[in-house]
Length: 490
Image 1 (cartoon, rainbow, N blue to C red):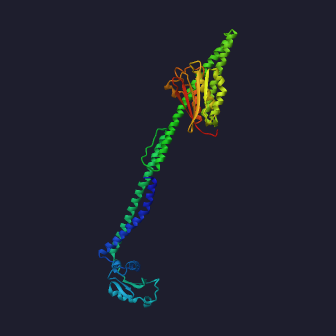
Image 2 (spheres, one colour):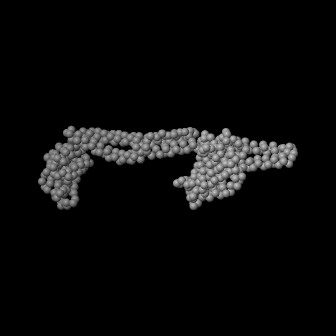
Image 3 (cartoon, rainbow, N blue to C red):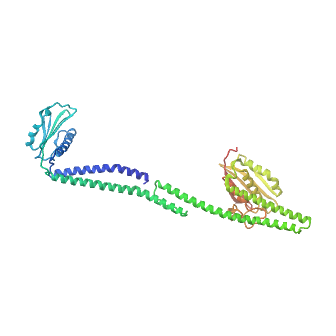
């Protein structure tokens, strides 16, 4: 049951319980009166206050019964007969004729003590006429009222009894009141206990569960997962808590992984930079010591120094771009591009240099527009890195590179495949790692920084795309890239 239903039910109980308690009290009071009448006890009038209360009760029961049930005395005589028959005398008349009489007939003369002008004064059918009087231990009550065009007279006279005559009544009343208050207290206490257990205990249990989970997270335990078996308003909160801890754990793991990658990057970069620096230093010392004592040898030394310097510059450029990609769109703003045009421009700018390195590029552009969100700088580096990678590891004199673009539903696809030596299948999933090289085909380090394919993967991630490395049969490597179609470059 949901918390909302529990609260609604508790409010209904708060509304129903008082009604139930009132009904119980009414039944208890009626039962007390019934027991009182069955025991043979009677009500004795000892004061004018008691007479007024008794006359009010007689008035309400008699005239209500006359309106609803007619003149049959069975509907009202039970309440009148609770009065002492020795002390009281009650008469009910209809249109001057007596229809009911109870009590001590010797008290009938007291009815004549009611002034005649009051008994016979004009009476209007829309009103009731009442006379109440007390005089030296004698009490008088008279009421006239029209019911269904008939005039009824109710006379009730009584003599005061000595105090203490109705001890039985008082004892019965006290016992009834005590039972009533005890029932009130027990029912109210039971309702409070039930509602507290039914609602508050249920809510507090869920809050304690969330508090314990929060304490676990505060202490660094991100593997904490809460188990909640109820389908109510707390269930989505628990699910959100579990998703939050899962995301925090994944974020921490990713942060740890990135920190390890950064350490590895620094270590690998230091090693790769030290290699050309060592060569440059050796050749400079050779020039300084006049080891290169011929023009040809000096020219060779200078060419080697120049090549190593270019390697270092290229390595630093790659590292700089890699760092910019870590910063995301802040460092490399994205814009709407048309991929066919971007790839065509890149190929046109670089085809002569690629041809000089025996790279034969075939470009199969899509016949339809390919709108994407991306960065020209990132695409420039992705394409040059992929082609340079194919050139670097070619085993034949020429390497054939096929670049193909197409659209598939809401996805733009781009493939760059070569016929080089390829990569072992077990190493395909690790090609995007910085400075990762396979043991055989990609073991030479002098011509690259080790960041080329990592930049490809990071660049695609930055632009909201993905990259997959696939084998080409009988040999070669295919880089399959996908991006969501978008932008306004139509």
